[in-house]
Each structure stands twice: as structure tokens, then as C-alpha cells.
Amino acid sequence: MANTVDQLLEQVRENRIWRSIFRSGTGDSNLHKSLFVQQNVFLHLFSIKARKRTLEFSATWYLGAMTLGTFLILVITGILLMLYYHPSVPQAYADMKDLQFVVSSGVFLRNLHRWSAHAMVFLVFAHMFKVFYRGAYRPPREFNWVVGVVLLLVTLLLSYTGYLLPWDQLAYWAVTVGSNIASAVPVMGSKIRFLMLGGTAVNANALLRFYVLHCVILPLAAILFIAIHFWRIRKDGGIYAGEPAPEVESK
Amino acid sequence: MSEPKDLVAVMDSDVRKTPRRIAFITKRTSPQVRVRDEDRVMTYPEVFFRAAVAIQVLAIALVVTSLLWDAPLEGLADPMHTPNPAKAPWYFLGLQELLHYFPPVVAGVLIPGLVVMALIIIPYFNINVEAEGLWLRDKAKRLRIFGIVVVVFCIFLAVFDVWVALVPTLIVAAFMLLAARTDPQTAKGFRQWLVRKPLSFWIMTWFLVELFVLTAIGTFFRGPGWSWVLPWRA
Image 1 (cartoon, each protein chain N blue to C red):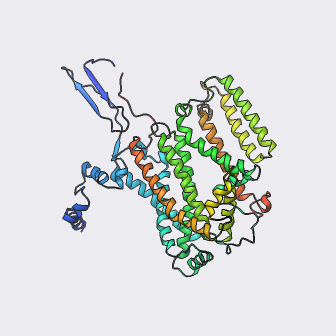
Image 2 (cartoon, rainbow over the protein chains, first blue to last red):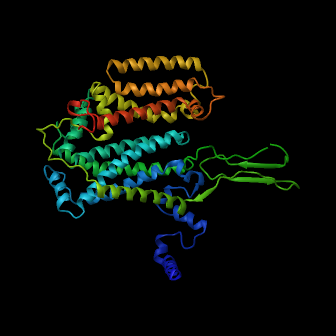
Image 3 (cartoon, rainbow over the protein chains, first blue to last red):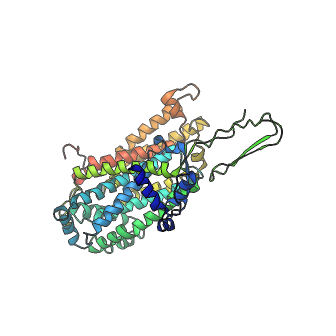
């Protein structure tokens, strides 16, 4: 049975159409494994080989991978939530109630999005401190650390703009508190706040702006910087392994 | 390098590539090349598999959480009724706690701006890159600077009544003094670990402790009018 399945899979992979899409071909030699990564537009951000030491749990605690995991969950649940959401006052709040009482698994969908968002903020911080205490920010990885700081800020902004969207009391006042801080910026504080909210108070314009930031601008920025972040891991010599690479042994 | 002289082993030092080793064996000798090589694995499937397992464990944990606990949803937003206290999202509550003590331009703009700047410049300072133990060199001079900085900073915090930030500062300073009083030659275990810690470690740890304490206080211990409450009484 297993053999038949294997043969079938092999036939599919040898198929002309399949080969036109995936060029790594059949077989499981190291060459094929290399091509699998190298010939894929997404996977080629990563290196073909990795040092074994960097895969140990203690090296990374897989915090970066898990942060990516929360981001993927957030993109999927976020797109599904967009199908039920209108960024207008007071319809936004009514949509929350619809998610709660009308939409199948609506509560679960919103729960998963919300808890994943909190998890992502937490994991980004944890990832940053882990990288710092490992000393992995050191050259040649200094620029990737800066990209990481940018991603931390993008994550915080994503979470903050998403916080307003349910348009309940919690959302409204949390964003009011936050936006008042923006007006403390010297000279141009009130201008920044006006630009951010599309008005002088948190209102329907602010909801629309936060919606656009949350669903379009910031996710695109996040994807862009995540791509740079991963690509730089490869360019900077792989994940930091703790000690300098082994040298020629001399006696 | 010792004998045999006619053996040259070259290792590419460019970390961006897989090190390439070329050995020229020119004369009659049998090769005695001894190079410890770094074990490498193929990214596909080894790394991807492990990352996928990590992501799946996380996904299961989040799904279970989502099944057990509902996301909060309060009444419709009402600009006429301010809840007391009105709290920012939890990751900003450390800043909101500082806002309670300092003017907004300090707590809301200056401090977060300085934190972001400080984070960005970390890898560009050699003192952070070399990461030598803080007290291993120039101890007397460094102790004087350390003393002045801590005293001035603590007076500053006390003037603004920021006891919640002052206590963690004193705790971290106490550990720094413990490290300073440790002899790197004879110390063992925790104190040996402590004495090897560079300045960047101490600053980051202080930042981490403050972040944790201020966020926890803002989240759990602040009630109406930003007054002190106990979480089990709220």
C-alpha cells in the first residue's frame, strides 16, 4: 500500500506540469534538498544548510519561529474577520455582536485573533531579549538587530491599531489614552494627533484610518521587514551559534 | 603550526559562505590534517520540520486558549462616559504608569524615544560587542562613576516619587555591587557568572526588570484615579 502511494507520488512529481512548477525534481539526495530551498521564491530567503548547534532548543527557544507562527495565524484569522467587519460607527460594534451570536465559530475566530495578537507582542519582546542575552546582535548581525527593532515597533503599532477596531468602551478609551500621548510631542504634537485620528477626537475617521493601517499598510510593512529579517539571517552567516566557528586545530 | 611544514591548511574565514578547506599535500608525507568541522544539516527538511513543530505547538496552545477564554468585549464606545481607570493595552501600561509621575512629554515621548534609540545603537558600540566583564578593568574608576550615576538617578526618581522604579533600580545596583565585590579568580557558580557580565548586560537587565515591574503594576495594581489597588480586591 505504502509502496503504491509512493509510486503514485513519484509519478505526480515526474509529471511534466509538476516539473514545470517545481524544478527540484524527484529524489531525495542533498542536491534535491538544496534545490527544494533554492528554487523556491519564498524558501530561498533561507540558507540551504544550517549549523546543527543552532537547532538546539536552548539556542533560540524557537521564539522567532513561534513569532512567525502567530503572525501567520493573525493573517489568516484577520482575513476571515475582515469578511464580517465594517469599519464604520456604530456598525463595527454590531459586527462584534454578530461574531458573537450569528457567525459560525465567530467567537472562536475573534478569540484566536486576539490571543494570538497578545502572544505575538509577548513573543517579539521575548525574542528580542533572548537575542540580546545570547549576544547574537553582534557584528555581522547588527543590521538585522535594527530590522528586528523596526519589527518590534510595527508589531506594537499593529496591535495598537487593532485594539480600536471592536469599537467598544475598552477599545475607545485605550486608544484615547494612547493618542493623547501623541499630542505631548513638542511643537507638532496636535498635528500628529490630528493626522493619526483624522480629527480632533477618536471618531469614525479614526476608526477608518486605524482599519486601513491595521489591515493594509502595517501588514505590508511587516511582511517586507520579515522578508528582510529572514534573508539577512542567511546573509549574516546563519543563526548565531554561540561561539566563533571552529578553527583549524593546531598543536 | 608545527611539523610537517609542507602541509598548508587554509580555511575560508568569510562567515557568509560555508567554509571551504583546501589542503595542498606537496611531498611524500601522509596527510595529518586535523580540522574540527561544524556539523551541518539540510535546511529542508531538518530546520523546516522543527520550525513547523514549534509553530504547531504554539497553534495548539492558542486554539485551546481561544476555546477556553473569550476575548473581552465591553459596551458600545461612548465618548460621554469615561471608564475609571481608562487603561491602554497591557504593553503600554508601563508607559502609562510613568505618565502618572512625569509630564507627558517625558513619559510619552522622551522615554520611549530614548528606549528605541538605545535599542538601535546597541550593536554599534564596541563596548557591547566585546562584552568584557564590567568590573574586570579600571575597577576603582568605574565604581566611582557607577556610584555617582546610581545616586543621582535614585534622587531623581525619589524627587518624582517614582518608588516603583526606584526599588528595582536598587536591586539591580545591589547585584552590580555584589559582582564588583567578587574576585574573578576564586569565585564560583553564580558569582563567577555575575562577575563576567558586561555593562550592556546590566543596562538591559535593569530595563527588563523595570519593564516587567511597571507593566505588572499598571496592569494589576492600578484602580480608579490610578490609585493603588490589590488585584484580588478589584
